[in-house]
Length: 357
Image (cartoon, rainbow, N blue to C red; front, side, top):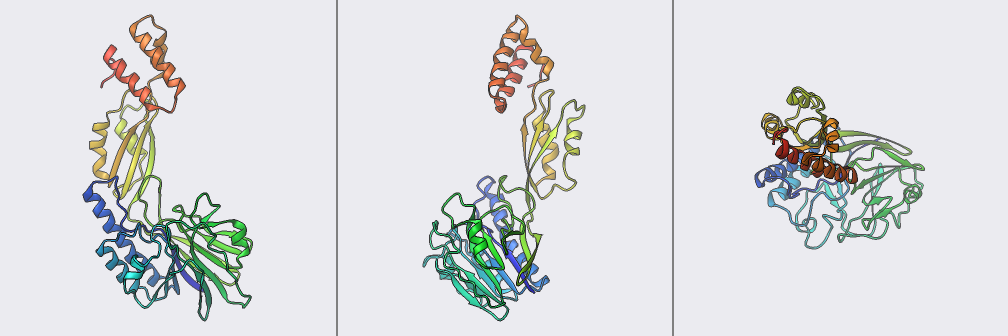
């Protein structure tokens, strides 16, 4: 049985453009810390192999501190490490992959043609992106011998493709003859999948970078032998992005209602907190002051709506009624546009003084 750590899509040195420059620099530093946690995991699990399936870097522009941290962490892994550069960190004569002297235990696939690595217990195939796009299936040309050994591949590509990033069909996977296909490119972990006799997986990115990368992130710990593979997700992320909704309908104390909707621990959360339901306009400033100290990052979004009985006043032969009729029509025409609900609130506040601005 071979013990494998399978990771991908670290995107080191991401710009984190949605954060302040100070927070962005801190987050890039925390990304480098992921490398030490990866090395520690490999040691703890007594891994036989570490497979890194592309986009380890976010671009060809790499901070010196990141290059140093990467070399140091990989050197601290007491087993072979194989890297298949992806579309963000593709292999070229100008890339970090060619420019640095890598530790002896690190092998970087440098060609867009499949390379075969033979070891006592396994055979491994890998290849690199050599530019930012690849139109051919990375499994093309794979010929797995029937020799009773464990057959692995470490590749960057896109299953059920929608673009030009190493398109792979499920038929390609099933026909490959592999025991395990370690993939990178998709940032949402797939869990262990199977096509025919071939097991495959995306580990997902090990740390979220935005609200399109929610929840726990990490790598896979894989145990493999010919014909049989198991995989366990291992979280590595320090911070998590989450979107949380809180219904404040009828809440006498909005803050308490919101707190009840939150998880117990929030200090490492970067959270978009959405207020829903009906009632008076929530005081977002007061909520932000009360809640923000407990989060790494917090954004409040008001998607509450006016009480239904207020809309009944649109039948009045008054300026308020005329205004509500106009806003009601807009809200019905575009129900997913919160701007009209907000406009109705401000308009009523101006007309009637019945709702606080």
